[in-house]
Length: 553
Image (cartoon, rainbow, N blue to C red; front, side, top):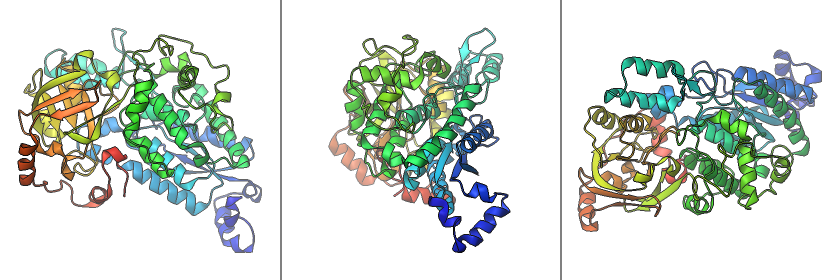
């Protein structure tokens, strides 16, 4: 066993003495040591139940003959961090989580790992760590939140809550209406109930083969989630015995499967940051351009919030991620020969799986659209690309041309939006919010939700070198690369410049001549960094552009 280095022989006697100090018995140390990486904390609603998940995992490990050893990982609640300096600390935690988990796993020489994440950066951070450490590993998440219900019985969720604020500012909703949303939008523990980033990544953990069936969709409050956790604890012992490791599962073909399932589900645009970063840790480079190639041949089968009015609990009842995969497999759109954390192939996992609700998961021959949920756009404004969740864009905004309204921070933009200074036809440009320029690449849920809540989502586009929450809908185009702080064209846009967006054609153009842009570039000076000390200052010096997954170099 890998852990023998700290358990066996006279040289390991000092190590054993410290393990005995923890209360472990000789009998327990004769079994495989399984690290249980638990992201429990008391500030993230998606993580407040993870202590119970961890206990269930440990019960499963013991039942299958292993010795569980729990240690923590951090997590940020993007919703609570939204709209202030805290959001600069969201994306950056992905790398802190990966680094700290790698350090703990390597320092203590575990034979296997069970990762217990749930929310946005926690899932990719732990997948990155799993790829680095490369010992048998399985994921079991905390599960999604149930949808809420307003006082009039309508179902609701966090994206509606953010949009309610915009509605308030244009007198479409009074203070009591806002309070109705805030009391009911988030009724239980769990990752917020739509196909936002956390649920997108938990679903893709299934898709890529690192989580058991149901991991992405079984609600957090269901006892089935605890049974899943026990089975994950049992399954890790089988993976240790068979020596099936993350890089055996997370192959290049598995990432292409994940991107395909991403397109069918209509996942968050943040997956276009996280999948390349995870692949990089596996020694695989995922091209930004591959997204369009996969999207063009992958039908969009699901319209969960914010794209539609269905939620994760509905997807679970319809058959979950496996049912979506089964639809894709009918047309040979995914490779079903790949091994997964079940110890079986995808084809074996999908035996007997059926689509139980064709309204929630559209059949492969009757999709919402013939192309996938995400598109990468390129042009002189984004030579290296930018990303839009096209499945959540109104038909009227698939092609749009309008004057630029330019802001050098999210704070300036939201102030103008709330003040009613943005009108139909405008293209809001928010820059110096990229990985380096932010630093930290803030999500722009407040401005996009304000625009939607004001009823302008079919008239106004928003473009940024920052990123968007999975709860964002509308013509919200993020990850503009190169970013402004790296000299990208977005830093040269001036008020009133015409910007043309064509999502079906995958283009985005700043209608300014090359000569004029050259003149502007000659005068451009990068602003002083907003943050000059601490982790964010170090992060800004090391981070790559968004089209590379904002990895640290």
